Length: 434
Image (cartoon, rainbow, N blue to C red; front, side, top):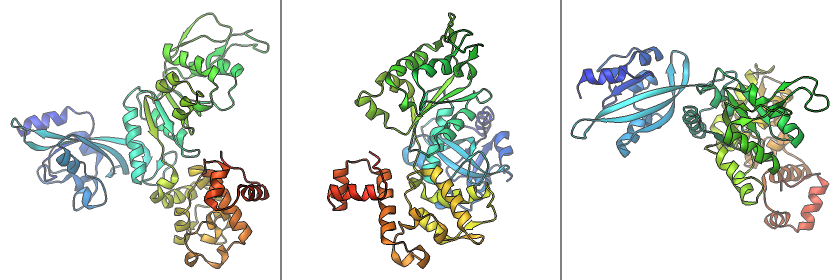
């Protein structure tokens, strides 16, 4: 394949793209790629890692997965999410790398195509997803793949893990981004409200309907509908929801004329929907209709390397932006399990900042539940020592927030009788999750 043919191929791509030889040297580049980086690209001289990362060597020598290495190992296309130094700062990019072969099937180089991810950042930015852990990058990769299609997306993750922010990211990076993003809270949505909220109603449809009202499905026309906590929709209403999704049609309450629905579907639940299907609590046909592309949201404890960055981000967004966490405080937070995930971290940051007497937030300024799970006594400072009763309460609260087994099973693991466990739970006013 000659140089002019390769350059023509690169120019035909509407996203930033380059052709690289196996030694990482850029041999062809399109204008979109040149405009993305502030480092000049010199054909036959510049390397991809020097332009995008300003590194002296390949990515896998500097703590990141190298897509070229993956291509060489598998002889197939590969994709990774990287942080690139662009004209807009440190920006996330979803990189697709494809081997290019000659007539004899020999790999002569690699085609690199970039998708810039605008909804996430490796630095503190308002209204963006923040992080740089491997789990976070894997999440971005899934979001980016979902955004390129109209497939229905199911977000599953623990409470407080940021499902609405991810749903918004799916919408913002899709072709529907200029249209409405409508959130439907499924928790507490009873049958009488279900149809009127979703489908709207005509004037005089029921007592009090003095004017016609558009439903949320009509408001979202052309955009994205996000059903939050869809696992809370009762079985009898699941049938109506399934009919809407399958026919893309609905009728306002009190109306005779059927209307057409045009929307992208995103759903979320902290519950195990497949387990609910097995128990007969969630319709199987509805599950497979909404779970076209499942995305798992990692819990904060799976994103330990993001905690310090998130703490700085939440401090900078509030009234305590002049404060900072000490190294010992960050260490303590990294050892905590965060049953409430991001939502709990925001609360902890606010509490700790208020408790700090100085600009530095110490480990002793953290809430009791954090201090009660320190890794070893040698790392604790005198202010962190808790009374035994309080330490027992903190420990039981932490366990009961995440434990899914029976009281008998928990008592056995704690090596106490079930009666003793109940007595302690009653004393501290603690309820088991199950």
